[in-house]
Image 1 (cartoon, rainbow, N blue to C red):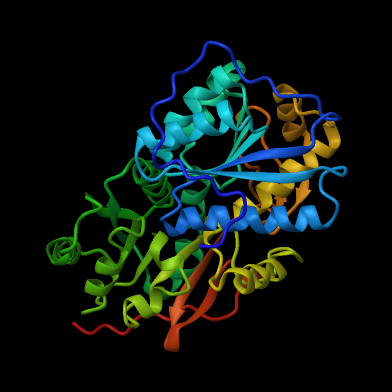
Image 2: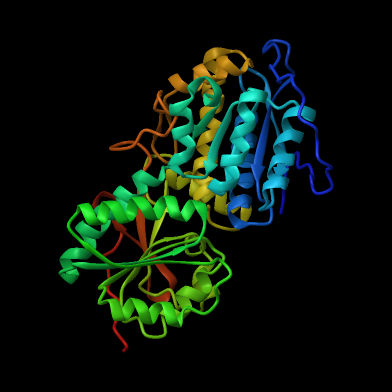
Amino acid sequence: MKSIYVLSFLCLSLIAIPSESWGGEDFNGARTVKIGILAPAQWKAGQGIIQAAQLAAEEINAGGGILGKNLELFIGDTETGTGKSVKALQKLVLEDKVHALIGGYASGLVLVQINYLPRYKVPFIGTGAGATTLTEKVARDYSRYKYFFQCMIGADKVGLSVRSFILEAVKPKLELQKIAILAENAKWAYNFTFYIDKELREAGLEVVFKEYFYPETREFSSLLNKVRESGAQYLVEVLSDAASVQLVSQWADTKWIPLGGINIGSIEGTFWDKVGGAALGEMVSHLGGFRVPVTPKTVPFFDRYTQRWGETPHYTSFFTYDAVYTLAEALKAVQSLEPDAIVKGLEEVSYAGVTGQIEFQKENHSLKFGEGYPGVIFVQWQEGGKRAVIWPPSLKTGDLILPTRQN
């Protein structure tokens, strides 16, 4: 993987936490603006964070930087463990003296990372974790957690979007009444599933089956049989890429029930080939963007990213790219590298990004949601590996096609 300013943290020993915090430096005296990128470098989601940050930094620097100051990126490989993720954050803050952090993937890890923000007082724009428990910390204890901003659609808003998609696009075709949910046994998935379940029930649909499976699961036949026995008419999936190939491949053996929801693995452009076309008919939520004109910037970004990296953007790429530009706008406004000044700048920023208008709620630092703001796009895998946007109606590039029932 190509990179600029990539630092390896694989051999770091545990860094002791000092009592003092990192308080920034004078903006006028700074040679560069240092940004720490937190991401699991071996995961597609993490690569999406790193690559989008690099692309944004290259563009900003080519355009003269932030009031003449170039962005300098430092990459912290969080891997997938709590200890590594904390060490990466500490190295960026205490040794590299970054002025802000961007990235973070997996809500459970980010929840641990943000507990260090009150001590270090470094702004952190999260772009890969949507758990509402993150922004709830800001709302409950603002003075301690005000340094965290969630530049990603929260789980509660995703739940609302899944409800709208099913009611508007799926229910009319199926006379839908009964729903099943299969979700990964992970902290992030519990949070998303809670809101999806809640929204569907409040919409008058019956959730007749809900079960969690471990990410290591490779055999889904028994779970799929339980779904069949429940009488469900539509199966909502909530999973990362750990078991996405196995679930979709085994679902495709019969395709007796439509499948759609959150499948992190299936948002990758190479997923069709990974499953040998088994994804035909799957309906996948894309958070933030796809190759459609969400804003005038969306398609050009999608194409530049694909040309630069040889692969399509991950959901983390859209939000990370916008986060870097949003931070740059905030810094231009406050002309300070002091943590509290950056927080103030981010609270007041309004940036027209590739995902929509980026603005944060002042009370909890979640993204604003609704018309014109970042949203959820449902994309269906169709014949020949084509991906058609089937919802929302304003961005549709094709019609929803129900899979042909084989058994």
